[in-house]
Each structure stands twice: as structure tokens, then as C-alpha cells.
Amino acid sequence: MNKLIGAAVVGQSGGPTAAINATLAGVIRSAFSRESGECITKLYGMRNGIEGFLDGRIVDLGEIFKNEDGTANEEKLQILSQTPAAALGSCRKKLPDPAQDEAFFDRLIEKFREHDVRYFFYIGGNDSMDTVEKLSRYIAAHDYPMRVVGLPKTIDNDLPGTDHAPGFGCAAKFIASQMQEIVRDCAVYTVPAVTIVEIMGRDAGWLTASAALPRILGGAAPDFVYLPESVFSMQAFFNDIRAAFEKKPNLVIAVSEGIRFANGTYVGEGDQSGVKDVFGHRYLAGTAKTLEDAVKREFGCKVRSVELSLTQRCAAHCASLTDLAESAAAGSAGVQAAILGATGCMIAIVRADEANGYSVSYETSEITHIANKERKVPDEFITERCNNVTDACLEYLLPLIQGEPQIIYNQGLPVHMSI
Image 1 (cartoon, one colour):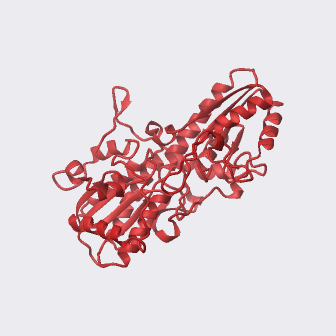
Image 2 (tube, rainbow, N blue to C red):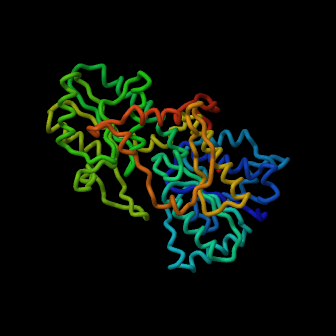
Image 3 (spheres, rainbow, N blue to C red):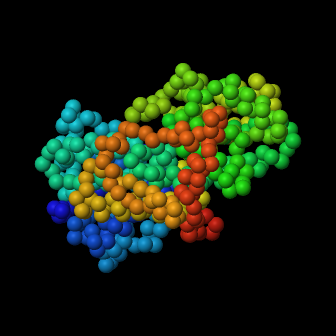
């Protein structure tokens, strides 16, 4: 190992989660540890990701989180970890290709030199790993010693190269809890009715699959679950509802926002703006509303649509202790891996053989195998009729929602912090 001494910078990018600040806390804890102190001289936070860094919006995290003895303040880190959203702010900036815009990266390197930054940590999902990949590629081809490590984050759980993604467990736990409550609420009447719950997930249905978790715990689960991995048929949808109505009057259905017809168009496309972000992704919404109107026309019964929306990713009061712990551990693992020489990689969670119970370890995964790629729900996790998920899928998901963190409250409300 070649010892590299200098400052580190950490940023958060993409959609926030209820666990992304736990990863930041892991970075801070490890950067200020005695094992890291000799190599990492300072730790800066980028406000609004790489976009903010380029504009000079950085904060010295040592001034906020470091004790007099140089270690991290654990009380502050606990409050940071239970704070939802990205404490440093986020962005969705797509970097140019290094081969086509060297001037952009030259400017970025000058910013790094200005603060003697030798370690770059980026917490984010698929698109954020695109930033890690491009920056790593540029650094490898130029004479500036710096190590670049991606730290996984996404409620969608669609990052390849890792068993699951930090942030998913908290969102999955919230969705499963909400679905169980919604199903019980809808079951009190005898009037025929359909409730359609829309869940985030453009191309991967992991979150929507988690809606069925109460089923293997003896709880109240949705009658049907539709994922974007399967082609959606309106006629098959109607047939499912018609068959279910023969057994019970009240139905609850979970649908992914990204379900598509056979021709590739989104089910809710008519209710969407068509606007895309800088990475070419459509802003999705309105799928449940489209289906509500369709069911109303077909059956003439009472129908309502529910969009869980932002609550899925910011419900820190219903967090998974497993997710928070793994998120923090991934942040710490990233710092230690970089100090030992790792670069151009993302920290991956590796699930052990579960014969002796659930456990994970942390490894580095090459960033070129991850950036701009997606990991979808496999076919074997989806039922033959494509209207639900299998028990095997739910057994895979269940460990990720386990445990309740000790949340600090103030007069009935969770305490949050701002940086």
C-alpha cells in the first residue's frame, strides 16, 4: 500500500433516503478514527454534491462532528443517522465524458488541489456511480494522486454489484407497514371497493415487492402486486379483479409507478408530463390514478388511488435498524478501503450463506460493472401470473427490515439536525 496523506471530501447525490445520513455518519466516524487520522487530514462535505463542490460550497465536517481528542462525536452522529433526507443536500448533475470535455475535469482537479483533496467519497445510486466512474477514469489517466470510492444508496435496490442497497430496507419497512395498515382499513366495509397503491420504482420492482411482506408474517397483505419487470395487461388486470371479487368485496392492489404495456409505454403516461431529468429518466407519477379511472369504468364500483410518494424515502421514524447499521458500516468500509489503496470502486454488501442466520460483509466492486446498470427483480421471484411475488422473494427481503433503532425524541417528535 502506498500511503496517501491529504483531505477527504464526501457528498450525497440523487434521491435521498431515510438511511443516507447513516452512511455519511459512517464516513465521518471512520475518517476521524485513530486508524484514519494519519492519512485523512481533514474531512469536507460537499453541499449539493459535485455540483456544489464545483461552486465552492463545502463545509468542514471536523468543526461540527470532531471531539477535542480528534474522534467523532457519537451523540451528534446518532442524531445525524436518524435524520431523513440528505443532510449535505443533493444534486442530479451528469458529468461529461472525460474524453470529450477535459476542461471540465481540469477545473475539478484544480478545486481538489485547492483543498488538497486526496480522497473522494460519493454516496448515491446508479447515476451517482456514473460520476464515480468518470472521475475515476480521468484520475487514472492523469497525474493527480486521489482515490475515488462510491458508497451505495438507493431505495430502489437496483444497484448491481451488491446484494442490496443501503436505504432500501427503511423504505421497504415503511411500505410493508403502510400496506398492512391500508389493507386493514379497507377491510371494514362490505361494499365492493378497490384501493390501488402506487409505489416508487421506475424499472425495478423491489419496493413494490416489499408491499407483500406482511403475507409471510401472518399480517394483512395486498391482493395483487404488479412490478415493472412484467408486461402489464389491462385485460389481465380486470380478470384478476373479477376473480378476486368472487371471494371478497374489498381489494387492495400494489402497483409500481413504472409498470408498462407490451408496447413499452408507461401505464400512467397519459397523466405524466413527459419531462426527463439530466440522465434521461422520466418523472413518473399518476399510474394508480390511471388504473383507478379504468377500474371505475369497468366495474362501476368504489375505487380510490393512493400514492405513497415522498413518504417512502423520508419516513425515518419507521426505520430499519439493520438498514441503518449496514448503511453506516458501508460508509466506514469505504474510508478504510480507500486508505488501503482502493479506488475506482463501490462498496458492496455481500450476504453470507444464511444457514447460520443473516449476516453480511463489505467488499469493493469495480465501478465499471455498476455505473449506468440496473439490477431487477428476477423472474423466479415473480408468480406465474405476474400479479404477485413469491415467498422466496419475501424471505430474501425480510432480514432487511429487521430491528427498531433507539430514536431520540423531543416532546413527541424525532430530533433531526442540519449541517
